[in-house]
Length: 86
Image (cartoon, rainbow, N blue to C red; front, side, top):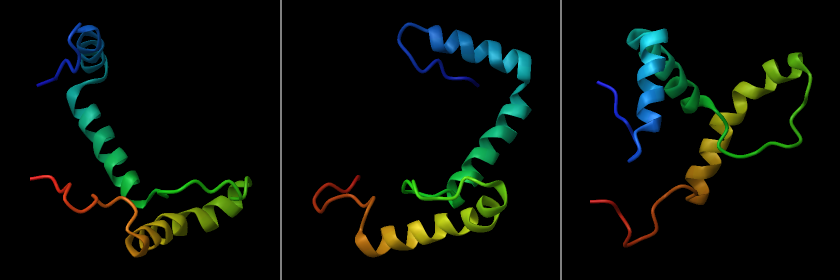
């Protein structure tokens, strides 16, 4: 089932067209890939990161876990006290 997402339905129409062209299974696979990438992606910008492909392949996989460790220690991304969802 596809959600329209907006009051006007314009986005819903586009979504239905994409599902018809690409297929539901392909979209589920893409969604899984995106969720998987988010688990390892950096959570902070790294403007000093190298631009060359070999250096990126070597260094990029470590940026996400290092960022997550830093976020855990500093409390970044946590709800402020008294604002927990319930």
